[in-house]
Image (tube, rainbow, N blue to C red; front, side, top):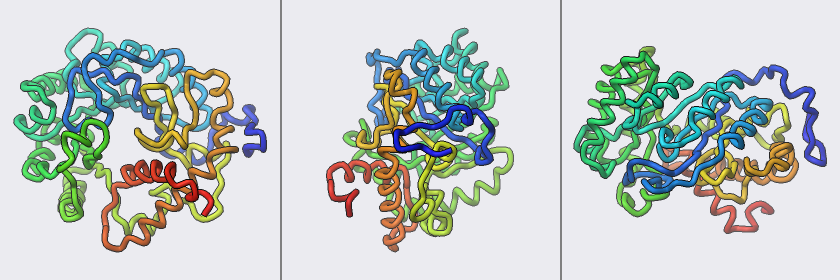
Length: 362
């Protein structure tokens, strides 16, 4: 079952179980940029007062469509998801469709009755943490943010809700990193995700000098892999950067499947394991901030949604795959840098592609 020249697929086959559905195929949703904080390192420049939000019915209609193509996990961030008025409706409908629901939150708004109701539809909630109390409050631009986050964690523990922590890695992290791992494990977290700072949004201006260089990434890589073993299986440790040797041995980790690979309707969510819905309803590949040159569609366009992926396969997939291929070979050629923050690199290259019209033709 392939996308034909008109971008069509036979929907009669789309609901069957596919053998490649062996893991998460993720839709990252940013339904609003409204937040109770204005963090220094925010890649989306979320802040209080940003009231625009996506309509829940448009989101759930898209989720129903995407589920037929193998997408099976919904990850909601923002902004602060618990300030999104439609969160409960979206998560409830998502569960009915068979999605795993994951929410990334600052953890400060979990004490209300509304929040407790919403938590019932969440499979895993990931709480942002920047280090000890001093560093956390400084990064969050709000004194008392750490204490309120701990109150939220206490709610999760009382409700026996599975949770994890997400830490944005900066050069200042090293002094608190080991203690952060201990803290997460002691709290009963199922996950500690370490994500290097990406210089987008507010971070580009307020943290421009906080670059995580290769020497620092090497130290974290060694420590992180030791702690992966130490805390397994009670707590999963996830490092959001890749070793170059691993990419060379397993190109699929960088979404490269070899020369001549062509996705079709059956393999679309295998080849493109993550798509993103931004605060405007735009659907883009891989990561927030990806160039709209590779736009998949918009959830508000009902006509477009009915054949969004098929049209993408017919008209834009080839350009995206050229970008993935070029980025893979860029990593291959770069023998000086062993550790790769792949999502940051591919987002950067998506914008370079837009500026270099000869890129797709060379």
